[in-house]
Image (tube, rainbow, N blue to C red):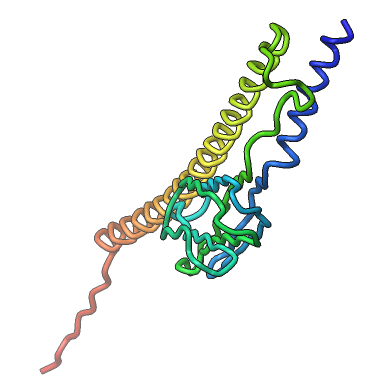
Length: 213
């Protein structure tokens, strides 16, 4: 009983470590004509993955650039809606990745990114990896992997829901303005027709001038 409880506590602890150690996940607003940079200290040989997606704004595109500590460009894409890039750090230092909306003159963007640094911490750090896992440990590993997949799917569908909501609200605004414009045009045309018809049937006063001989 105590062994099973200890295994379950290790699974929960590993889930917490995944949220604390593996990197950064953030959704932020990027104004027009603006550029936002983020920095991460990485050790040589560490495998990293940068994933981003534009959630709302304009054509849902943004510029992205990733540089190593020496300023060498590792990744650069222009006007991308979403992308993922994986690399292995070739040197120690602070890596910089920037998102730019400088090409847009009036459209704000909402950008989501997930920067994962390193691999997952071992689920059983104190266990001897030479020996085979017990049935309970194997089940915990499977649950751990399933929970990570669930988290990834939840994030993916939350982003899709936010993007769909933004598109729907934008479409609703356009339809509302179009309806108001049509109503105004219809009102102007109706008034013009009434005035025109009244001008056809209005009595015109004629004046007769007699010329005396």
